[in-house]
Image (tube, rainbow, N blue to C red; front, top):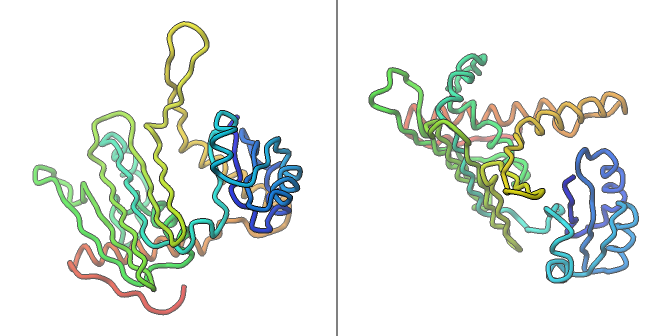
Length: 265
Protein backbone atom coordinates (compact mmCIF):
# COMPACT_ATOMS: atom_id res chain seq x y z
CA UNK A 1 0.00 0.00 0.00
CA UNK A 2 1.52 3.33 -1.12
CA UNK A 3 1.16 6.04 1.53
CA UNK A 4 0.63 9.53 0.08
CA UNK A 5 1.06 13.02 1.51
CA UNK A 6 -1.00 15.84 -0.01
CA UNK A 7 1.04 19.05 -0.21
CA UNK A 8 -1.20 22.12 -0.39
CA UNK A 9 -4.98 21.87 -0.45
CA UNK A 10 -5.78 24.87 -2.72
CA UNK A 11 -9.45 24.70 -1.69
CA UNK A 12 -9.78 21.30 -3.38
CA UNK A 13 -10.33 19.17 -0.30
CA UNK A 14 -13.79 18.08 -1.40
CA UNK A 15 -12.49 16.97 -4.81
CA UNK A 16 -9.67 15.00 -3.20
CA UNK A 17 -12.19 13.48 -0.84
CA UNK A 18 -14.10 12.13 -3.84
CA UNK A 19 -10.94 10.86 -5.53
CA UNK A 20 -9.31 9.19 -2.52
CA UNK A 21 -11.77 6.25 -2.17
CA UNK A 22 -11.15 5.35 -5.84
CA UNK A 23 -7.41 4.87 -5.35
CA UNK A 24 -6.17 1.30 -5.62
CA UNK A 25 -3.22 0.17 -3.50
CA UNK A 26 -2.73 3.70 -2.18
CA UNK A 27 -4.13 5.95 0.55
CA UNK A 28 -3.48 9.41 1.97
CA UNK A 29 -1.78 9.43 5.37
CA UNK A 30 -0.78 13.10 5.64
CA UNK A 31 -1.92 16.58 4.57
CA UNK A 32 0.17 19.76 4.55
CA UNK A 33 -1.22 23.29 4.23
CA UNK A 34 -0.11 26.66 5.59
CA UNK A 35 -3.59 26.97 7.12
CA UNK A 36 -3.55 24.24 9.75
CA UNK A 37 -7.35 24.22 10.05
CA UNK A 38 -7.68 23.52 6.31
CA UNK A 39 -5.06 20.79 6.61
CA UNK A 40 -7.00 19.23 9.47
CA UNK A 41 -10.39 19.31 7.72
CA UNK A 42 -8.88 17.95 4.49
CA UNK A 43 -7.16 15.17 6.41
CA UNK A 44 -10.52 14.20 7.89
CA UNK A 45 -12.05 14.04 4.39
CA UNK A 46 -9.19 11.88 3.12
CA UNK A 47 -8.98 9.64 6.17
CA UNK A 48 -5.40 10.80 6.80
CA UNK A 49 -3.98 10.66 10.31
CA UNK A 50 -1.45 13.51 9.99
CA UNK A 51 -2.12 17.22 9.39
CA UNK A 52 0.69 19.81 9.61
CA UNK A 53 1.29 23.37 8.45
CA UNK A 54 4.65 22.97 6.66
CA UNK A 55 6.52 20.49 4.52
CA UNK A 56 9.58 20.87 6.76
CA UNK A 57 7.52 19.80 9.74
CA UNK A 58 6.23 16.79 7.81
CA UNK A 59 9.81 15.73 7.03
CA UNK A 60 11.11 16.37 10.54
CA UNK A 61 8.28 14.73 12.46
CA UNK A 62 6.70 12.18 10.10
CA UNK A 63 9.29 11.22 7.47
CA UNK A 64 8.66 7.47 8.00
CA UNK A 65 4.88 7.76 7.66
CA UNK A 66 4.55 8.48 3.92
CA UNK A 67 6.11 7.13 0.72
CA UNK A 68 5.35 9.86 -1.83
CA UNK A 69 3.89 13.34 -2.19
CA UNK A 70 1.14 14.77 -4.43
CA UNK A 71 1.88 18.41 -5.44
CA UNK A 72 -1.38 20.26 -5.93
CA UNK A 73 -1.78 22.28 -9.13
CA UNK A 74 0.11 25.55 -8.91
CA UNK A 75 2.44 24.61 -6.06
CA UNK A 76 5.43 24.76 -8.42
CA UNK A 77 4.11 27.87 -10.10
CA UNK A 78 4.32 28.34 -13.86
CA UNK A 79 6.36 25.56 -15.48
CA UNK A 80 9.57 26.96 -16.96
CA UNK A 81 11.97 24.10 -17.68
CA UNK A 82 11.21 20.38 -17.97
CA UNK A 83 13.69 17.59 -18.66
CA UNK A 84 12.64 13.98 -19.27
CA UNK A 85 14.92 10.99 -19.87
CA UNK A 86 13.10 7.91 -21.17
CA UNK A 87 15.63 5.21 -22.04
CA UNK A 88 14.54 1.70 -22.95
CA UNK A 89 16.34 -1.59 -23.62
CA UNK A 90 16.90 -2.76 -27.18
CA UNK A 91 14.83 -5.92 -26.60
CA UNK A 92 11.61 -3.87 -26.50
CA UNK A 93 11.94 -2.78 -30.12
CA UNK A 94 10.77 -6.18 -31.41
CA UNK A 95 7.42 -5.87 -29.67
CA UNK A 96 7.12 -2.20 -30.63
CA UNK A 97 7.58 -3.00 -34.33
CA UNK A 98 4.38 -5.05 -34.28
CA UNK A 99 2.29 -2.04 -33.32
CA UNK A 100 0.29 -0.19 -35.98
CA UNK A 101 2.17 2.84 -37.25
CA UNK A 102 0.83 6.33 -36.63
CA UNK A 103 1.06 8.18 -39.99
CA UNK A 104 4.08 10.47 -40.08
CA UNK A 105 5.61 9.12 -36.85
CA UNK A 106 8.45 6.61 -36.73
CA UNK A 107 8.65 3.82 -34.19
CA UNK A 108 10.96 5.69 -31.82
CA UNK A 109 8.69 8.73 -31.91
CA UNK A 110 5.72 6.52 -31.07
CA UNK A 111 7.60 5.45 -27.95
CA UNK A 112 7.84 9.06 -26.74
CA UNK A 113 4.22 10.14 -27.35
CA UNK A 114 3.43 9.40 -23.69
CA UNK A 115 6.17 11.77 -22.57
CA UNK A 116 4.87 14.43 -24.97
CA UNK A 117 1.40 14.08 -23.45
CA UNK A 118 2.88 14.39 -19.94
CA UNK A 119 4.74 17.55 -20.99
CA UNK A 120 1.57 19.17 -22.33
CA UNK A 121 -0.21 18.33 -19.08
CA UNK A 122 2.55 19.84 -16.90
CA UNK A 123 2.68 23.08 -18.92
CA UNK A 124 -1.11 23.21 -19.28
CA UNK A 125 -0.92 23.94 -23.01
CA UNK A 126 0.69 22.65 -26.19
CA UNK A 127 4.07 24.00 -27.36
CA UNK A 128 4.27 26.51 -30.20
CA UNK A 129 7.74 25.44 -31.37
CA UNK A 130 8.99 21.89 -32.00
CA UNK A 131 12.53 20.83 -32.88
CA UNK A 132 14.09 17.38 -32.90
CA UNK A 133 17.47 15.76 -33.52
CA UNK A 134 18.25 12.08 -33.78
CA UNK A 135 21.07 9.58 -34.20
CA UNK A 136 21.00 6.38 -36.23
CA UNK A 137 23.26 3.38 -35.74
CA UNK A 138 25.42 3.32 -38.91
CA UNK A 139 25.59 -0.48 -38.74
CA UNK A 140 21.81 -0.92 -38.53
CA UNK A 141 19.73 -1.73 -41.60
CA UNK A 142 16.76 0.13 -40.16
CA UNK A 143 16.01 3.76 -41.04
CA UNK A 144 14.69 4.33 -37.53
CA UNK A 145 16.50 6.55 -35.05
CA UNK A 146 18.21 4.87 -32.09
CA UNK A 147 18.37 8.11 -30.10
CA UNK A 148 15.96 11.04 -30.24
CA UNK A 149 15.93 14.41 -28.51
CA UNK A 150 12.91 16.72 -28.67
CA UNK A 151 12.99 20.44 -27.85
CA UNK A 152 9.55 21.91 -27.20
CA UNK A 153 9.18 25.67 -26.83
CA UNK A 154 6.21 27.27 -25.06
CA UNK A 155 4.76 30.77 -25.14
CA UNK A 156 6.38 32.90 -22.45
CA UNK A 157 9.78 31.23 -22.75
CA UNK A 158 9.08 27.81 -21.21
CA UNK A 159 11.04 24.87 -22.63
CA UNK A 160 10.95 21.08 -22.40
CA UNK A 161 13.71 18.69 -23.47
CA UNK A 162 12.79 15.02 -23.92
CA UNK A 163 15.33 12.41 -24.87
CA UNK A 164 14.74 8.74 -25.53
CA UNK A 165 16.79 5.81 -26.74
CA UNK A 166 16.09 2.18 -27.51
CA UNK A 167 19.66 0.90 -27.22
CA UNK A 168 20.11 0.10 -23.54
CA UNK A 169 21.32 -3.43 -22.75
CA UNK A 170 18.65 -6.05 -22.11
CA UNK A 171 17.10 -5.47 -18.70
CA UNK A 172 15.46 -2.51 -16.98
CA UNK A 173 14.86 0.80 -18.66
CA UNK A 174 15.37 4.17 -17.00
CA UNK A 175 13.02 7.15 -16.58
CA UNK A 176 13.63 10.47 -14.85
CA UNK A 177 11.83 13.80 -14.81
CA UNK A 178 12.85 17.17 -13.43
CA UNK A 179 10.73 20.31 -13.60
CA UNK A 180 11.54 23.86 -12.51
CA UNK A 181 8.64 26.22 -11.93
CA UNK A 182 8.38 29.86 -10.97
CA UNK A 183 7.94 28.99 -7.28
CA UNK A 184 9.40 25.51 -6.87
CA UNK A 185 11.02 22.46 -8.44
CA UNK A 186 10.53 18.70 -8.40
CA UNK A 187 12.48 15.60 -9.44
CA UNK A 188 11.48 11.97 -9.81
CA UNK A 189 13.04 8.83 -11.25
CA UNK A 190 12.06 5.18 -11.32
CA UNK A 191 15.17 3.74 -9.61
CA UNK A 192 14.92 0.82 -12.05
CA UNK A 193 11.35 0.18 -10.80
CA UNK A 194 12.79 -1.66 -7.81
CA UNK A 195 11.21 -1.89 -4.37
CA UNK A 196 13.42 -3.05 -1.50
CA UNK A 197 12.12 -6.00 0.53
CA UNK A 198 13.21 -7.28 3.91
CA UNK A 199 11.38 -9.86 5.96
CA UNK A 200 14.21 -11.56 7.79
CA UNK A 201 17.17 -13.23 6.18
CA UNK A 202 18.77 -11.52 3.20
CA UNK A 203 17.19 -8.34 1.75
CA UNK A 204 16.05 -8.45 -1.85
CA UNK A 205 14.51 -6.20 -4.52
CA UNK A 206 11.32 -6.63 -6.51
CA UNK A 207 10.66 -5.20 -9.96
CA UNK A 208 7.12 -3.84 -9.64
CA UNK A 209 6.34 -3.22 -13.31
CA UNK A 210 4.79 0.26 -13.04
CA UNK A 211 3.76 0.16 -16.69
CA UNK A 212 1.18 -2.50 -15.82
CA UNK A 213 -0.20 -0.26 -13.07
CA UNK A 214 -0.48 2.64 -15.50
CA UNK A 215 -2.51 0.55 -17.94
CA UNK A 216 -4.70 -0.67 -15.09
CA UNK A 217 -5.36 2.86 -13.80
CA UNK A 218 -6.31 4.10 -17.27
CA UNK A 219 -8.75 1.22 -17.74
CA UNK A 220 -10.17 1.70 -14.24
CA UNK A 221 -10.76 5.42 -14.94
CA UNK A 222 -12.59 4.54 -18.17
CA UNK A 223 -14.82 2.11 -16.25
CA UNK A 224 -15.59 4.68 -13.55
CA UNK A 225 -16.39 7.35 -16.16
CA UNK A 226 -18.76 4.98 -17.94
CA UNK A 227 -20.51 4.02 -14.71
CA UNK A 228 -20.87 7.68 -13.67
CA UNK A 229 -21.88 8.90 -17.16
CA UNK A 230 -19.09 11.48 -17.33
CA UNK A 231 -16.10 12.29 -19.53
CA UNK A 232 -12.93 10.39 -18.54
CA UNK A 233 -10.03 12.40 -17.13
CA UNK A 234 -8.05 11.76 -20.33
CA UNK A 235 -9.96 12.26 -23.57
CA UNK A 236 -9.29 11.45 -27.22
CA UNK A 237 -8.40 15.11 -27.79
CA UNK A 238 -5.47 14.73 -25.37
CA UNK A 239 -4.15 11.79 -27.37
CA UNK A 240 -4.55 13.63 -30.68
CA UNK A 241 -2.67 16.62 -29.28
CA UNK A 242 0.32 14.43 -28.38
CA UNK A 243 0.25 12.78 -31.81
CA UNK A 244 0.20 16.23 -33.45
CA UNK A 245 3.40 17.15 -31.61
CA UNK A 246 4.94 13.80 -32.61
CA UNK A 247 4.17 14.50 -36.26
CA UNK A 248 5.73 17.97 -35.96
CA UNK A 249 8.84 16.34 -34.45
CA UNK A 250 9.00 13.94 -37.40
CA UNK A 251 8.90 16.93 -39.77
CA UNK A 252 11.67 18.64 -37.80
CA UNK A 253 13.81 15.51 -38.04
CA UNK A 254 13.30 15.29 -41.79
CA UNK A 255 13.98 18.97 -42.50
CA UNK A 256 16.47 19.83 -39.71
CA UNK A 257 14.35 22.89 -39.04
CA UNK A 258 12.10 23.88 -36.15
CA UNK A 259 8.35 23.58 -36.75
CA UNK A 260 6.19 26.51 -35.71
CA UNK A 261 2.68 25.56 -34.57
CA UNK A 262 -0.09 28.10 -34.90
CA UNK A 263 -3.73 28.22 -33.86
CA UNK A 264 -5.45 26.47 -30.99
CA UNK A 265 -5.81 22.75 -30.44
